[in-house]
Image (cartoon, rainbow, N blue to C red; front, side, top):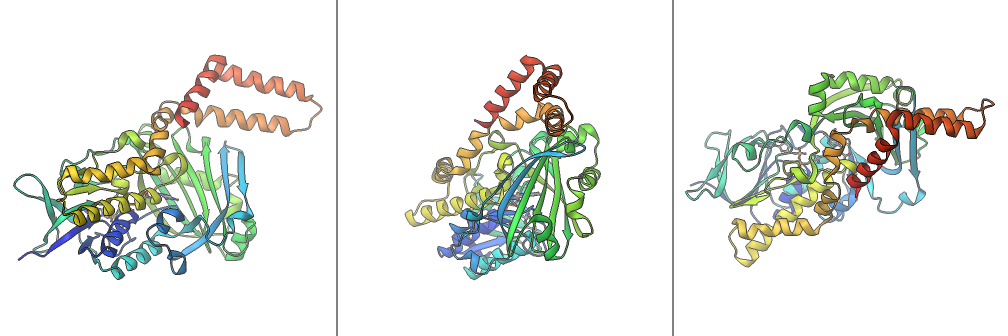
Length: 433
Ligand code: FAD
């Protein structure tokens, strides 16, 4: 007889781990299946961990989770070819007892999270790919088919936490493949430097960390951002742009990353580092409008597979964990109430999501993806204008400040005209509402 579980979770990223942990902790019999050699082996992230989402699942995580640095400073750069204009925020209040944001290394973090899942009682099987969903006569999902011999397993519910590619859900007709303009391709490297070098270059002490998010002409007119995150003895350096833009411009992602690394604002920070890891991964950036149907008879979708990424704020893992937790809580509720896991009872998951920051934030930025996709001037013209204006204002050369301001205004009007400037302000305001 086939072994039957209360729940099967496909994938051991943050969303799958959050779901499996919550279910197992509540006493349900859980099977989690991961295709990677170990949890985290297939996963790529910057990575900033937002503590709040994890704290709601494992309040004591700070005691033994592999955390790199807590973030005390955020830098936002608008780059052009020669420099950058930036905004920084740094505060000693981020040196709090329970910091709010940490840098992490995903391979280590996912392994740690998986150990908690197993300690909570879930059975975790790696190096196993779920190849199909098992359907009952009425079409209800009743389990999964894996690539193992006799690898069919049944469950009351299957939670799809399979990440952005979501091949399983797509093949089963539960969701459609995201369009190229709804996904970014990010490439990332790990640059190893001695701890004291990192601390000197970034003005840090002990476990303090800095994150830099950069945009502008560095993405060569494509919609995207670059980043540098400080770990204890390494820097995560990466850049990502929409797949559709890479396709149109024929730009090679690793060449773009090389140009970012050679930039005069970046090179001094990474100079002399030993580059040890190179990874590429997709990020779902379609936002609210790209969210698929999230529940049905016998199934739920969580995390990147449901397009839960807030690209405006570079948040993904926290949305993944929150969706995983809320999905699990819905299953636990149904079990306690004796309700079958059919669509009408699983709708509770979507209702809880709608009430949470996850849907509220994604809804807030619902116009942002298409606004950026169709207005490339935000990645070309404006960074250049801002950089030229900053240079002009800062250069002390005998020209009056009146004249400088007049020239700067004229440059903006010449390039975008008054109508264009007003429309751009309106478009951005609408996208950020
Ligand atoms: P994933 O982490 O992708 O996990 C899915 C898992 O499912 C994988 O382990 C995969 O092997 C497994 N799987 C897939 N299919 C199958 C199958 N058929 N059978 C078995 N197993 C399967 N978010 C942040 O919060 N902060 C950041 O700083 C940040 N930076 C990022 C930087 C980069 C370069 C990238 C690419 C992403 C970043 N994100 C960041 C986003 C974040 O990584 C994701 O939102 C998050 O990992 C989503 O978690 P998930 O569990 O849904 O999916």
